[in-house]
Amino acid sequence: MVFFSALKNLFSRRDKRTSNASSLRSKKKSLSFSNGNQQHNSDKSASDSSANSTTNSSSINGHSFQFKDGRRYHGISEVSYVLPNDDDEADRVHQQHWILRYALQSNYRAPVTDMLEKGITVLDSGCGPATWAFEMGEAWPNSTFHGIDASCVFPENIKPANVEFVLGNIAKEIPYPDNTFDYIHQRLLLLGLTDDDWDNALKQLYRVLKPGGYIEVAEPDLQDLENMGPTLRKLQYTMSDMLNSRNMPNKAACEIEDRLIKAGFVNTNLKITPLKLNHTDKTGKLLWEDYKHGYLNLRPVMAQIVPEWQDPEVYERFVTACGIEAEQTKANVNWYACYAQKPAL
Ligand SMILES: C[S@@+](CC[C@H](N)C(=O)[O-])C[C@H]1O[C@@H](n2cnc3c(N)ncnc32)[C@H](O)[C@@H]1O
Image 1 (tube, rainbow, N blue to C red):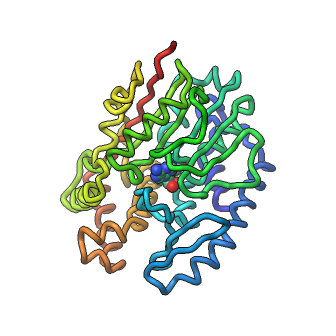
Image 2: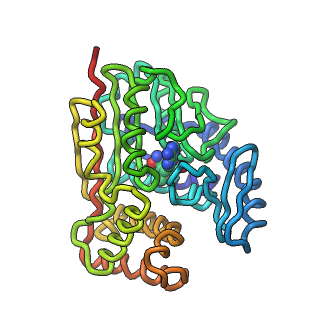
């Protein structure tokens, strides 16, 4: 996927300790992306055939999907995730990874660098199309990386030898024995977990983490941005209403540390980083592009709260106005990243 490698090159840095990516080999890149292209082709015919229908369900290679208005979604009734799982959304999530790494100058916060170098077992919970797992796997060849996701958006066949994937709902059961992982990473699950799901997922993650192992959870505060004007405030608070209507916490980022403590983890360490939204420099512009793309992909669920947003043009105009306002007011998204440990025996 040329787009993916161009982004990787755009954001890559030379220092392995900060970027964790400089040793990426082009051979592996082309292998992983050709697998993505295979998925593109089969997905395309499925979504094209449903482009004019409102909703239908289908099974591709044994995986269940729902198609609504030409977009593909997971078809699992107990999973609450609201974004599509088609190619357009996978491209957005890939790009989002590079933007976050560029903005945060790292792929993780937990003090696990020496462990990764030596060789440990890592879980990426809700791995999506697996950009983080692939990059980490290639940067740390002595370690083994496992990704789990409710949708088969990860590459299933061609991947680095030290990266594996399983399909599963993290809020139900994570299909690994107790005390398997030395380090667990989870990022951007806030549009997928209800209040109960958070508790259940953290219980599962606690179970599969080794005593003394590290967990790291990262989310943006999507309700209260710094320096919000009235237009952006309406968008963000509609997001909160949408999440609440589905029993999902609207301040998940701000609750991470408390939830980790409630689940039994200790030695929590929280860092809140303000990320510029559409102002000041390249990072701000790129983050806004991702933000806008994400919001456009959320239109069906946002329109359930504000009916005039059923019209894609009306909605896009509104989201575009939010970007202009964010640039003027210098709005920032607060990024919460908290790591903690399972108590040692
Ligand atoms: C926005 S993507 C983030 C992907 C990845 N963590 C990253 O940061 O690039 C969220 C992913 O979480 C997955 N997800 C949502 N709810 C889930 C659940 N209950 N169990 C497993 N995966 C879930 C979705 O299928 C989606 O791939």
